[in-house]
Image (cartoon, rainbow, N blue to C red; front, side, top):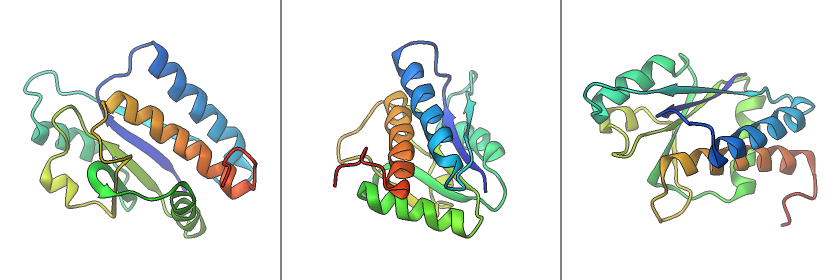
Length: 155
């Protein structure tokens, strides 16, 4: 199993980058004993046109073939953290790769969104795509702690 995050834009050093790195490091450490591999982050950027179609082409290049594709989209399902953890465990148990896709400021191309196995939202509000990375990284770590029975997630 592989876990990837494919995201539009480059995360510069700063508080968001520090949080993403921290949560992904925590996930790598806690997920190891659960059979969850470290997360690979793939950043893409179209400096020329910047259209959602151009971004979709770049994102498509880094999505692993055969991976479950999870689009981060404000119109998607709003799973609970335990539901998210259960879905991640299901992919692990199937030895299926998973790729979380985060679009740019203008969202995701409809053709790319149509390829999604699951579309999830982090709430009904719209979030800056850099903060979505932080919240996704935290939810991945939270999922690992839920699967491990850790008290981090207080249900």
